[in-house]
Image (cartoon, rainbow, N blue to C red; front, side, top):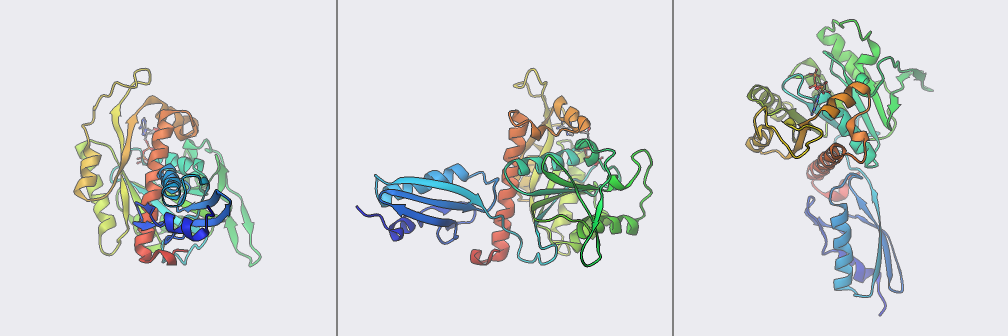
Length: 363
Ligand SMILES: Nc1ncnc2c1ncn2[C@@H]1O[C@H](COP(=O)(O)OP(=O)(O)OP(=O)(O)O)[C@@H](O)[C@H]1O
């Protein structure tokens, strides 16, 4: 039997992307389709390298071709990705998606989550940057072992000076901490801090990025207004711990993104320090701060729950020693961060598709 392109494409029209709710052919995800005798090969172009449904979609394609075209077909599928971006991001054109990491309260692990999320997205194959915009306590330099690092600058042909982000573990980083003495408190006044943060976006040589993660200061202040109103934001990730005091503040922080004047998609809630677990007894879980607070918060705002991270000594040690736990590819914590990163990327792709209205117009 001769297999034709039309038959294969017709079969693949039966495979739907569960997030984007359209079939893979309509979504223009099938590339470089080649057929030689009974060998069918193509590239499946996903919306993110961190796509959690990679294997499921691949299997569904093979099954559809075998079922609708020929049992004897030998199907080879390569995976590639083209990260989508929000429609309105004419500014900062080479940065596809700016993702804010926010918390209502300080000390809940926002910088830890932002750093590990960046590393996990990068490990999945995406081009990732990280801005530490926490004026009160920039901790990204410590978490990446870059306390004494000072970024250099370069001049463009047009005479503009651009800051060069520092690259570590494949992530491009800029922190307000790079521009201040770590032992001196920085008395940022509102406008000064806002201008400094704007420079980290506008006057830096970021190059092409799939995701730029922004570690915001806790709460809702000037920096939040500057960033949410000044830049095209793909969405915000909310970090909380399960205690009532943290949840009350997180609720306010989450509500801010939903205000009509701000209106930024909430990608979901991450519950950090969800339970304590001793490293040597990983099956023992102690819910010392209460249980499921983050999950319930997500439910009450009708936003996705992205996952929970336990309170474990190695996370603190990783942060202090400048090696985020997501770097340890064999570890269970790295796997948890990889799963969460996949869900974040998935939500970004869904929001971008919804904003674009018609998927064919996604750039
Ligand atoms: N799940 C965890 N397990 C163990 N330690 C953690 C965990 N999450 C965060 N920590 C530790 O708690 C401390 C505070 O975390 P982090 O700096 O990420 O919080 P933050 O919310 O960004 O704080 P800030 O409000 O100061 O910016 C750090 O020492 C970090 O290593």
